[in-house]
Image (cartoon, rainbow over all chains, first blue to last red):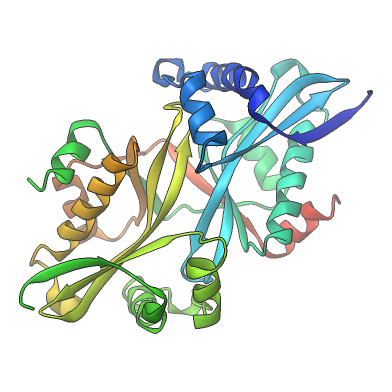
Amino acid sequence: MAGTRVREASEEDVPLILSLIRELAEYERLSHEVVATEEGLRAGLFGGRPFAEVLIAEQDGSPAGFALFFHNFSTFLGKPGIYLEDLYVKPELRGAGIGKKLLGHLARLAKERGCGRLEWWVLDWNAPSIGFYEKIGAVAMDDWTVYRLAGGALDELASGA
Amino acid sequence: MAGTRVREASEEDVPLILSLIRELAEYERLSHEVVATEEGLRAGLFGGRPFAEVLIAEQDGSPAGFALFFHNFSTFLGKPGIYLEDLYVKPELRGAGIGKKLLGHLARLAKERGCGRLEWWVLDWNAPSIGFYEKIGAVAMDDWTVYRLAGGALDELASGA
């Protein structure tokens, strides 16, 4: 099974997906933020209501990387899009086109499913990834900032305080 | 029916939702980007595979604003979150707590559905909204930038070129 193959993940891949998430977090210097468990991933990805989908890239039959994505929705376009939460290729396999194969698979899914856009976030210091994304024609949404509400502030808002 | 009420939108609300989307785009100075149609919204929100959900706020029985949201998924938390695509309150009704009621409803939904986060984007020049969001405890994700791939670049990636 030589070469690169992209396939859809199934429930048996949960331990692999978690280990790849941990590798990605290490690369992003965010390992301290990872509290995901196999149980949580199983419920969220393969439970009664799946919240995201996963593609696995294999190189010569071994795991090489993954993409985790879900659908967003643009009110201005009036149609869904694809949001790429994670894209990861193992460091020793970078530069061989595996990331582009994962993105190409997603772009085809986007067209098949009538989506208008493919979107994701990038850490500002991650110059190699930014260079790659700009090469394929992605545009930085520079005049927007992401806000996040979590923990106690989320609880407080939910309580109506 | 005095006071503020937040309710879930149904298919009959599609014309109202589209008119509120257009009002929001006007406020964001992005009207030229709105190509959404009633047909697109009907298919995307109330079709066989709904991609987003809508809350309508009413003041004294009349439409006052809306929130459109969908689920995202955090691989680091290993659980879903809620992403707020649009939050809009009619200009003449602002400052009366309607936006906070919509967000509070969403925060309760987030807790009920086991979500760890509520997230959204804000235009950097929109100081009134940013002030409001920071007051309720939201945090700016300053070290991330959103990238978008659309149009010809998306087609090209999909074609494997």
